[in-house]
Image (cartoon, rainbow, N blue to C red; front, top):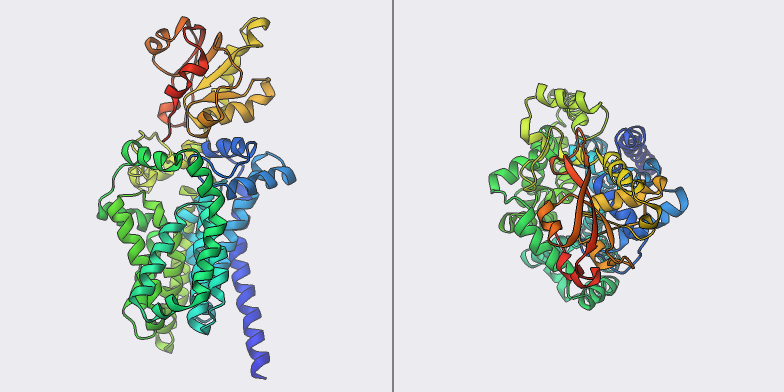
Amino acid sequence: MADASRVSNGVRDTVLAMGLAAVPLMLHLLTNTQYGYFRDEFYYIACSAHLDFGYVDHPPLSILMLAVERWLLGDSLSAIRFLPAVAGALLVLLTAAITRALGGGRFAQGLAALAVVVAPFYLAVGNFFSMNVLEPLFWMMAAYLLVRIVNTGNSRLWLAFGVVAGLGLENKHSMLLFGCGVLVALLLTPQRKYLRDGWLWLGAVTAALLFLPNILWEAGLGWPTLEFMHNAQTYKIAPMSPVELLVQQILMLQPLTLPLWLAGIWYYLFSRHGQRYRLCGWIYVVVLAVCILQRTKAYYLAPIYPLLLAAGAIVFERLTQRSDRGWLRPACISALAIGGIITAPLALPVLPADTLVRYARFLHLGESAKGATSETAKLGELPQYFADMFGWEDVVEAVARAYESLPVEERRKAAIYVGNYGEAGAIDVLGKARHLPPAISGHNNYWLWGPGDYSGEVVIVLGGPSQDLESLFEKVERVGTVRCGYCMPFENDRSVYVCRGLKRPLKEIWPQLKHYV
């Protein structure tokens, strides 16, 4: 009878988690084609056509997955965004599973899962393809295995942990940050006993072997990702104070979830019930400390929060067990749901762009709604992750007009040079309909792919000061301008030039065009 009851409860818990996971899945499937391709999606599509063991700004796993997805489903928005939608749903399921492994009942599991559903960050990254939507999955799969190791004492699970960590590293190098947190947490807690366990080290070797192909690729090319990270930290990322970092965490996770994840920190680090899981609290402390010291982007911390929300939900479940506090449960659920509905338009493209601008103003969110402190680039009326979905058709149209204006003889040898991988990827993907040749660029992996066989006799150039071009070419002619409404400001009002007679061979000047950032 007891076994049957446990099975029945397990089924009900699973049904609840799956029902909540279906919410973001349906939201993404219904809304992810409302705007256009995201800037980075063009680049990732280009990378998936050049499969390799690494790329300047990311490891290869997500690109391999995109290549498979494109082979199965095609290049449409709904096709390449299917995997992110599924990943967002899986994170909800995983959060519920972690909560249950920590000892949480059905209410705690539902509350933690709902907190993930309404968090603007997870909604936003689940709406377009990037390795960022897979990152929380790898972190939380590793966290779930840690909790299982603590619960069962089964050292063999370290091998599974190593597989997850290795794949996580092949998805995004930030998995090293989580691994650093785990190492320090083991040293500071009774779980340090596992440092003498051979299964842990076998897991570490497994992770290293899975990561090895990317490491060898990096070493063979002079560690391009380290150069990229240095340049990004120096020129691109706007430094954050600890207070600014905290404010961004509150906004990313939805302000109404703040009591939950703060309670989660307390549960792990100070409560008697959470003592056996203290290493989870130390992992967060280490990750937070590194982010503060490195003055990173706010979202670098985002993958860790489902672990905190799970513990916070358990705290709230225990606080509301008394009958006279039972009303707090529906009140909390209702508040989170209503808060999620209010903030969802800031993370999902459910509103027309002009309506979204007015809505953000109505909420008096101003610059905070745009994540203005993440990067040094000037922002427009939309948050960057929305603005980067606008203007690409305008870029391609302006370049296509310039290309089509050339005599047939010149079209055969004309190159299209652009300043960043978003523009290059847009031309490669959207420009096919206009029969444009593949773009070249000095930005990140486009520089590694090189200038091809272009001679430089005729080059269509997007952007750049005309005087710089005149120093390189015999003749420079301005033939058009890109004008876009809600795109990033630096993409608007960019000139299109037809340049002829490169004064030096293109392959000779190519090393000077490298732009890793």
